[in-house]
Structure formats: C-alpha cells, structure tokens
Length: 274
Image (cartoon, rainbow, N blue to C red; front, side, top):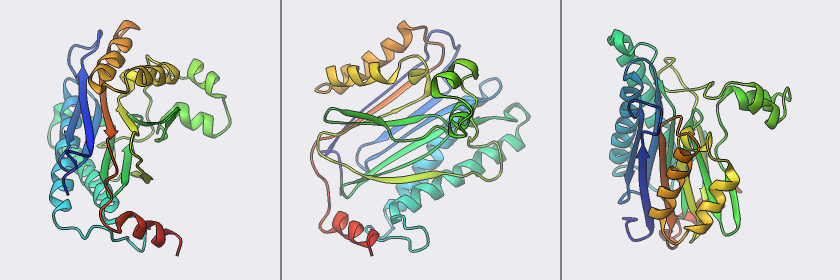
C-alpha cells in the first residue's frame, strides 16, 4: 500500500552558521512511509560518512524487507510487529557497517552517528532511535517529545542527580551515551504509536532543539500547521537566528487521513491484550 496520498512529508537540512560542512544525513521515502535522520560525529568529514552509511544502509534494508515481510504479524518473543523488527534489525546492521568501515579506514576511526527512524503503516508509526536526535508529535493542541535522549544530560536527570534545568546548565551538550558505529553492538529503542489524521511528527537533529526550546517549536508548528514547507523553513531560520551552532535538520510528516489496511491495526491491538 503506497502512502503518498496519506502523508505529507517535508525534509530540510541546513549547514547552520558555524560548521564548515553538513554532517547530518536525511532521507524521506513517501511511497513506503519511511523517514530517516542521522547526525554524524567524528574527525574530518568522518561524521558525514557515518550518517550517510546509517541512512543509506537502513533505508536499503527496510525497503527490501517491506516487500517480503508478512504485514500484520507480531514477533512473539518481542511483542513487536514485523515492521518494527525489520527497522530494529536494519539499524543494528547499519551499526555494524559503520563500525567495520571505521576499522578499515584510519581517517574514519572513532566516527559515529545518531539515528532516528519513523515507519508509517497500518495506522501505526514505528519509531526507532539511537542517540539524541529526536522525534516529536503534535496532536491537536498537544505537543510532546516521543523519543528519550541517549545523552549524559538525560542520564543525570533520570538518576535524580540534577533537575532538568540544572543538568542543562551544568552539563556539556552533545555528549551522547549511545551512537551507531562506536561499538560492535548497539541497543536500539523501538516503540509503536497509533497515528491519527492531522498528527504532525517532527524528526530533528540537536541543531534545532539545542537552539530552539520546545515551546517555540510547538508555537511554530501551530502557526504553520497548514503549510509544512513554511513550518520547516521557519524552524531552521529560528535555529540560525539564535546562532546556528550546529547543522540543522528537520523532517515533518503530517497524516492527512487514516491509512489502516483491513483489520491490520485492530489485529495488532487485539494481539497486545491477549
């Protein structure tokens, strides 16, 4: 089932004001309802190598897998849908590709990248991420961060050592506790969320949310909710106006209408409560 008439997607990436080149990589495949964003890190241009591998390898494996998996099935061992299991496995394999590439090329040693993936299908979005690139959802008047950062700041908050305000004031930003390519193995956070008509999802690198607070992001999405191109451009412009210290990548997805295939979403709901 193509989702080109069910979703609207806008994808914008900007180098920002301080960086010499863009180490973010993004991809949107509206036919398959798939979007991917990665924020690379490492030595000279190694970050953009890592993020490009992450995006390309994940997309290729997910795209190929969607053609052969049995949609609507659930993995008994994990409780995840076949689609979610596919996304998770693709990210794990992308991690191996980056890690092995770094071992093979001295210029790429130590390179890594965050990743956040959203796959829309059957009235659901699978969200998978590693690192501190984020996914937000705007639903009617509500706006919330769906992913949870894999960062030192978030870890200090979770342990109760600092309040959110204290952690952000006293702890360096951009220190991630998980990333692709750093170790041979990686832990991927995966969740499944229902999608309602009118929902707007935002994927972004920290070049946006480090410069623009959540309230301003929400206000901007509310102001331009009828025009995703203007919304994405406004968010990038806000980040640059506040200094543009990092690359800024934004992917916006709006659910135009429901897209459940017959029985798919209800079947998964029933399976969850068995």
